[in-house]
Length: 305
Image 1 (cartoon, rainbow, N blue to C red):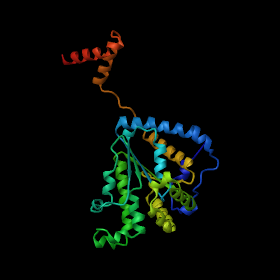
Image 2: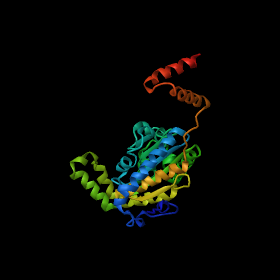
Image 3: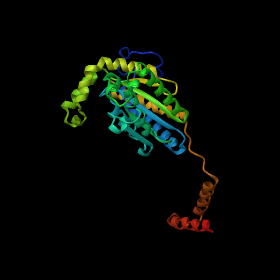
Image 4: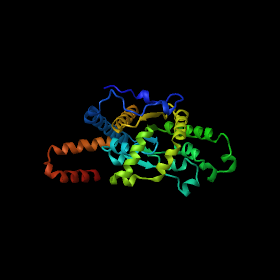
């Protein structure tokens, strides 16, 4: 089965209204769920272990999309087999008073993963060029008036964001930016399920319903966001999100391919550690496994001498 991730990459100016939200009809769900998806998630586990062991690179996976686009469930399914020690997951809500007292990238910087870790952002700094812009939240913020009234404020923010992402890349932190593209009709069905299904009541938020009235404006702002900030060092991918099984496959492929491109390796052992292993192996030749503890004690005493 051949799937081209290149076709989902944002390279030029786009309009989300022209992009499909449906799964590729040539891809069979049964084959994906029974074979392809489990295989790729296992490959991610292997690569993540090497990323952790090497401790040189970091990988940031950023999710944006309309409410109910499937961000939470995608993270849960794609990374369910990954060692939690090698994951950092952050969901960005409305900024707190403390966060508003700093620059808009401050809280994002605080959430960056260390080397060797996959960091997952559920929403991100891009809220500050989409939602903040749509609702004109700049007006009541603590910024100086000359910045609030600057007609180039959004152009400046895109420049700041792109420069910051390039800085991270140049310091060994790679970024995959994923926009989950859900249709208005599919979103309506998912929001309705949160009202009907008691098991999903906890997900219900009246604000999600209110935001639907701004659907067209959101589509315009997201379209602008995607082409203005998709770069070779931090590219955007627009993934169809109406069929969750297909969306998760594409996400898994992106993560697997980006980890493979980083190509992390298990570090070589120091001479001292290699000598220790050689010594322990030689002890195994004369010591029964039941006496392994005594063998380690013997080695420890010999080291002290």
